[in-house]
Length: 155
Image (cartoon, rainbow, N blue to C red):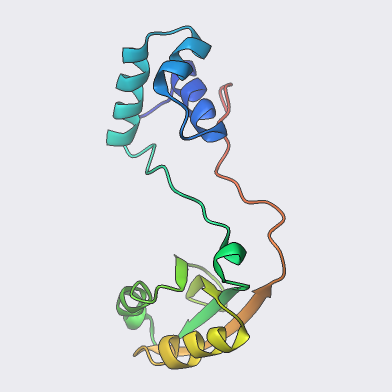
């Protein structure tokens, strides 16, 4: 799908507001047919516009009180893909990105407490072949977290 039209964007806005909203309710709100909503959502999923509808947990309420962004330096660039594969096996690592600058990889780690974070860093991440070092940035609070914007205009 090269371009989203007005209807696609309206559907996306409705889903961003409430991903569990019934397709029939979206259709009613937009004054379009229920089958059109189903077709458009199916097409956007097939095209990769909609990746997934995800369950968002409150990490603190389930026992993860420490959130840390971790910059990872590699010993050599050739280790990048192997390191990412190993990071994916660590359940506390919830996001992983290749980045530019001082670090090759930036990850987001959730831990029960600082001792747990230390264990994730020293006993798991630092043990991965190719990791040259890490720097951790403790997150005190998340002020907002959102998906990319959906604009109705030409932008």
